Every structure is written in structure tokens, then in C-alpha cells.
Image (cartoon, rainbow, N blue to C red):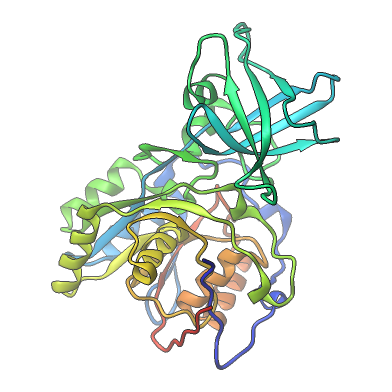
Length: 367
């Protein structure tokens, strides 16, 4: 089910979420220290330029910070068809029986049953290959289903870790390195399955986590395996015609209890990243603690759980721009982005962060 919302006061189109961004502000590398990134604090009456390590002092004892504990897997694999043509796979999801669902980049699609020879790590020619079974989840699906195997019978997670590449976003213009292996990953990542990092959480280091604990700020986690669809462009001017990608999430019982306790003591639920927002609000809408979500949050959405949001700066005309505009208000968010460009904040995955408070006057429709 796709869930979406539109404002009753204003009809938004795709162009409303565009903004001018100088290319040099797109961060290509992480800064040396995670928590030394900048933080645009928009939680009060006026925005303030801060450093991310200031965050604990901006929250109150009794608040609850909710993280996405997904782990990015080395999901990009390269190889050849039997004809010698180059092929690239980006594994979106691991299925049962050593099967995977993957995006495939190739000049001409191979026939069902074709076995692709994949490049193993240097010095390990262990017969790594992928056999095409068809489309996924059905004949009309946009992904392809493969059996991933090698001579040792390793499962797909082991094979990706041994032979895969870090699936850096399309706007990062260098090949993955050892630095990306460590820094395109949160310090608390534990559940493998994402092909993109929950980037707002990349700013947290052990010192910031300890400062949250010392201030009496509670922590909890959810899992949402971020898919490559997070970078999918919106191609229709009528944003309600956009079909959101599906992502798998899990909301533990301990986190549900932590949120209930937080609300009982009148604390605030602080979501780290849009993926955490999508998880929490998907549960609030559906009542399902685990499953796939294609929730689409646009201005007018009625948030049920999240009070504050820590997030990076997002691509123009993206669904994530729509989400943050729904959360903090369209006009305030666009003004914050203008401020960020003027003050030379760093954008996107390896960029800086902002702290937002939820606007209160909201209406919702759902289809």
C-alpha cells in the first residue's frame, strides 16, 4: 500500500522543491572527525549555526533519540556476460536460498538462465557468479532475481563482504576506498541489509553518544534497510503520482516501550534521519511492527510520533525534501536551505546536518 498526503491549503508540485545548489557544496569526502561537522540548529525561533557535538546540550533529559541501526553492505558487484559485455549488479535485498534481488546495469539484458561471471577480490578466483532467474518480485518488477554463488558455497552476505564494493551514492564521484568502508557506516551499525547509509547518523561518534547518556537522554533503535530507491528521481510534476520504493523495516518491542515511556514523561521523540521517521510513522499508520513500507510523506502529513528530526541536507526535488518540508514547514525549510547555501554548508551524504522541530498545524489525507 502506498501512503501519501497532500496539503489542503496549497497544492505542491515538483518544482516547489527545487533549489539552486553550487556543485562544490556537494561533499565528496567525510571530514576527519564525525562530530566536527556543522549543525544548523533550527529547533528554536531562529536558526543558529553550530557544531554537531553541541547536539546533546540542545536536547532535554528524558528525551528519546531513535537511531536506524541498519548496516550498509558492499552491494555493488561487477562482471561480464558470457558474450563479454560488462555488467554491474547492485543488490537491493537478500532472499531465501542464496537468491538476491538486484538492479542490473548492462547494455543488453541477458536471457533468463544466463550465468554472469563476477569479479572476485584480487587473488581469490573462487567461481563467483550470478544466475538470472527473472524479474522480482514478479514479471513486472523493476529488480532482477539471481542466485549468487561461488565454489565455497558462501551465502550472499559473505560474498558481498568478500567481493563487493561500497555502494556510494551517484553524486559521489570517486570509487569506493577503505575510508568509505568505515565512514559510509554508522558507529552502531549492526543489522546488514542497506545499500545506502542512514546519513544523519554518520555524525554520531562515541563521545556524542556518551554525552547523550550523561545528560539523561534515552536511546533506542529501529531497523530500516535503506534501498537504492532513495535516490530515485521524481519524474512527474504532480508529486502524488510518484510511486515510492519499498523498504523493509523492523520496530523492536523495546523501542515501542521506550517511546511510550518517553511520551508518558512528556519527553520528545527525536528521530535520527528520515529513515527513522519513515519507520516510526509507518508503524503509527499501519500498526505493523515489521514489514515493507512505501510511505510517502509530503506537506500536510499528520505526524503521530516524531517531535524533532536530525537530518542531512537533501537533493533538490527529492522525496526527502518533501518529507522535511512536511515536518518543519515548507517555507521555513526552503529558507533554511537558502541559509545553508549562503553559509557554505556541505550537502548530501557526507555533508552537514540540521536539527528541526515539528510544525504543529497539519492536516492529512491518505489514499
